[in-house]
Structures are given as C-alpha cells and as structure tokens.
Length: 437
Image 1 (cartoon, rainbow, N blue to C red):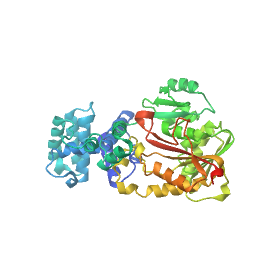
Image 2 (image 1 turned 60 degrees about the vertical axis):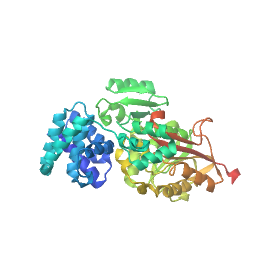
Image 3 (image 1 turned 90 degrees about the vertical axis):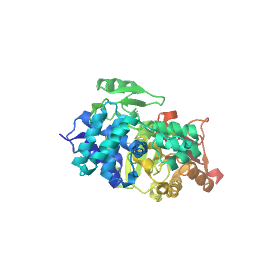
Image 4 (image 1 turned 45 degrees about the vertical axis):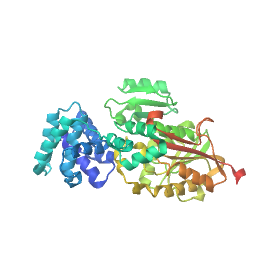
C-alpha cells in the first residue's frame, strides 16, 4: 500500500514545482493511489494544512536555521514543512512519529544528506511550539499568524478595515463548510434532508431558501443515490446568493457568459422552475460539455450550452432579460478552498481589472431595456470589484445601480465567511434604463 506521507510529499512538490492548483494536484495523485478512506483523509489534511499555514510554518523553521529558507533544496524544505505541520497542528500525530517519518522521507527522496538537520530543527520546533513575532506592526503580526503575504494583509486592512480583515484571515484557515443547492424542480428541502440522513449524511437548513449545509462523514458524494438522481448540486452559499441576486423569473431569457462549471446557471434555472432559457457559455468546448452533463443529471431542460468568448459580442444571440457576468478574477475570496492563491504576487493581479471591464462592457450589450446585469467575482479586491463597477457606470449612462437583494442593500455587496457563512465574494446589480441614455 502507498505511504500517505509520500503521497502528500509528491502532491506538494507538484504544486510548488508546477504551480498547479492544489485540488488538481492532490486529486490527480490520490486517484492513482491505493490508499483507504482514512489515509486519504490524512493526506488531504496534511497537504492542505502545509499550504495554508506555509508562512507560519516557515517562520517557525527560520527560528532554528542558520541560513535562509530559500537556500534549502525544495525537497528538504517541503519535508521540513510537512514535519512542522504535523508537530504543531496535527494533535493525533506524536511528535516522535512526525520527526522519524520526516527523516524516512528524506532518505526515500534523495535528501538523506539533510536527515540530521531535519531531525534537529523539527525537535526544536516541537519543543518551542507556535511562536509569533513581537515588536512588529499589526499587519506583520497577522501575516505570520494567518500565513498571508504582508502586501495582501495591508491591502485588505486598507480596503476593508482591520477587524473584517482579521476575521476573514482567521476564517480562511481550516477549510470551509459544504453547502448544496436543493433542486426544487424535483424535491423539497425536508424531503431531501430525510433522504440524506438515511444515506449517513448530516444536514441542516440555512438562512437561504433551498440551501443546506452538509457533512458527508467520509462518503463520496458522487456515489450517493440522492446525487445520482439529481436532487441537488454542490454550491457555496456565495454563489447561490449571486444567482438569487439575478432575480430571474419563469420564462425569462438568461445569459450566463462565464458559466463553467455551471453551478450558478443550475440555480438560476431551478429558481425559474426550469421554465425559460438559460444560455451558458464558456470559451472551451470541454467545459461546456461538463455544464450540459451536469444539467442532464439535474434534469434541467432550460439549460443550453454553447462555446463563446465573454469579451466578444455575438449579435446573433439577441437580447436577454437577465445577464450574469461572473468574471475571471484573482480568487482571493476562496483562499480557504485553494490556499495557494494567496501566495501570488501583487504584479500577477494587475492586468485583471482591464479584462474584467472588457467582459462586463460586452455583457451589457446583451441586456434588454429594463433588464438586469449582475457583475460578480470571488475575490476581495476593490480594484477588481467596486472600481470596475464605478468605471462601467461612468461610461454607460443607460445603466443604473440598484439594490442587490432588497431596498436595504447597496448596489454592491461584499460577502465574507464570518458574516455570511460563505466564501469571500462580490456582487453588483445593474439595470438597463434607456431613458437615461
């Protein structure tokens, strides 16, 4: 049988070396292993834990090293990070086991020359526990405590304030709850809850209609009969609220211009009781196929998939009552699901607002007079959110900002996990009014 720590090591090395998405790197390696459910859970916890706590772990290691971390070979640093994470954050792993298994990893992966160093440093980490810096700024303290680059911490404090930034950073560690959207065209919330419990899944209602929070208790969701029958799809609370903001009605024509993997389109179709048309577009044909396949499982006949570039106008499509424009973004709101995102450099994100504006500008051409346009991202960055919307309104006098959910709401809503039980997310609601043109 495969060694769980070796599997975690290989997945981490692939993530660091190839800059791969964490979920794709881990899923690809786990799918080829012969690990049982318990060992897969261990690998997943260790893998994601090392990534999301990387800066905190590196700070601990640096206290006991005489040379900078960047001088270490990648395989040595990765093994040290894994050992430190087990020592500091995995209570069920004895310190001695974490250290000894790390030494074994070094010998198996061509780093036996560093086994003595690994042994000495990890023993000191185990003895010292989690140390946090003193005599530093608040932002520097948060950076180490919550393993987030200093530039990003400072950006969030400047844009959202210290309290919300600290609360978001705290919520970004330890993973996220799993939510599902009940397919109201097939089943009610109560009926589905009864079925899920019989399948060994814990579930509870939430503040949002047709949204359940679940705990799979180790079950593979795709093997559950309730999933196969299309009674629900997995979708974070934020995405469900985004679909709700579209306020689509029966027999509406809806365009979802950046649709893949299709979750918001499914929720919109269900909101419309599967009456009307929801045209879903993505630039890649294989991703469109995934959208269509998911709609077939859910039994949604109003979903129509098509290949399309959201930044290029296609006059043959006609106009829509509702247009959803969930643009590509930096993804900073979902770092609790994909923690590697937070380690991007500030320069990596600089071109995004221009791309996002081009897409929403094009999207506006499809909106009927009196129709609604939703601009959304899964990031926390005013350059990608409020600033794009402000530029759009400045250049499109035939659109006006309207409250997202109710008259009490602003036209721009920022969701955060500690406030909304959701990913970090941004929603702006705009309506076309040609009288102002």
